[in-house]
Length: 383
Image 1 (tube, rainbow, N blue to C red):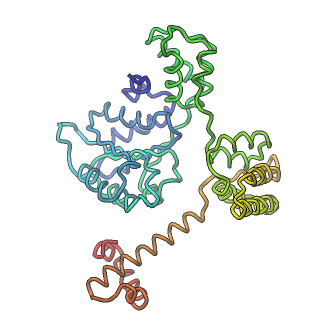
Image 2: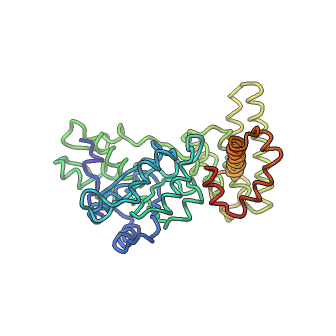
Image 3: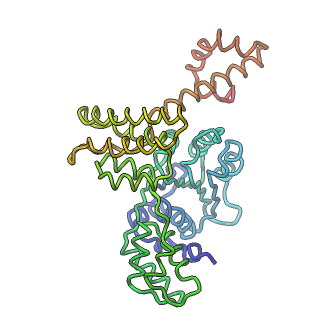
């Protein structure tokens, strides 16, 4: 059996670290009413968010309906699976039915097809407790985030992970050297699931684990875009940024947009100097595309990371690392365009007028009508 699942916490009291988050969840459950706001659990993967939600349901004797938002996120699926459950009582005698929507930060994009709006509607109308889980709080639409009470999970300390590694070894009757336990805890970087998986791999077919057994089971070194851009904003060394760039799987034309967003929040003198580096990097990206010579990417990457970081003073203001604002503006414009097309199609079908004619001659008038009763107008035309 998979050790990560075998040793998953069964009760809130078993959750490692994050005592404040656990207390907040317990208080919310004990005092829950249909008017209570849903919870939004956020934090890096592997630190116990989903386990805490499931443990809470077990402690409260609540039935669980778990919906993985990245697998089933269309409006129709969410309304069919979660919508009915959120409005009805449990069929199995449980006091409540807990709706868990995992990976809620994967609701945006072309595959969404109304999922974000369906989730927001579900949160407004739910008569059962709802918990949303996400790795990236900024990946959740504002319409969903403002309906929830946030619960932040932090990375688990190395000392706590080391203790848990020793406990599992004792339960599995495996001898584990102090060096091996320390190595696993340090490599996991606060991720309990990774620590357990590394321990399981190192212990495979062995009765004792030494430090050298762990080296072949190390967690893959991967840096996220947040790590890389955070390093640029902090003015990290060239060597550190090169390492992060190598470990980050994002392409330079994607990274430069994140770096530009961080630089735009800096103080003017620093911002101007960093923008010069970014503009130079953008030139190399353009030459890469024109010549189809991807060897130029290394120059672009160095300029947008090490170059920009070199302009950041040690005591400079640290901007918040977040997705580029232009993405949100583009998504909003695309959404507005889709609404106009849907409205024109609906009006055209009713009045037997071509969609193009509706868009050209009647849209401004329709917007005035919509301003009087936006919700009723949207419901009538299924917007």
